[in-house]
Image (cartoon, rainbow, N blue to C red; front, side, top):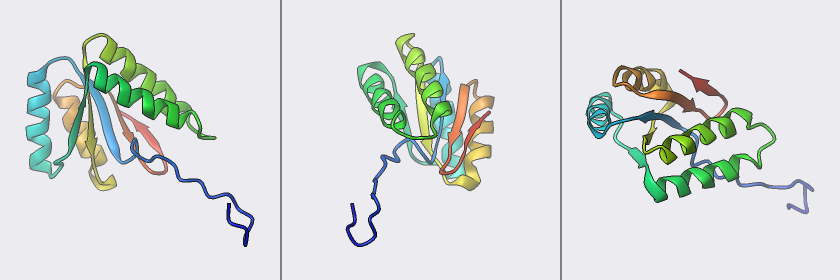
Length: 126
């Protein structure tokens, strides 16, 4: 709290935002996706599977549950948790907003499902 202005300052965990997230079934899909995204200029792709992936997704879900607006985020994170529980692979590609649509398009072409861009002001489901 800032006593001069009497406002509450809140630092939100923005780790979920600025990413295109989706689900693939096989490692070869993930590999092909990463290769295609590298050509596009997307270099950072986090793989969320197994216990570590579950933990990361649960942390994001807990964080967004604190937001006033966050309905879509919570719903999608629950879907990603279910995917990991079913031995599917969730990926999170860090993108600049201008590359979100193209990244999602490439992901869909590689067989990804549940593809969503978590932008700073909007959540876009592809």
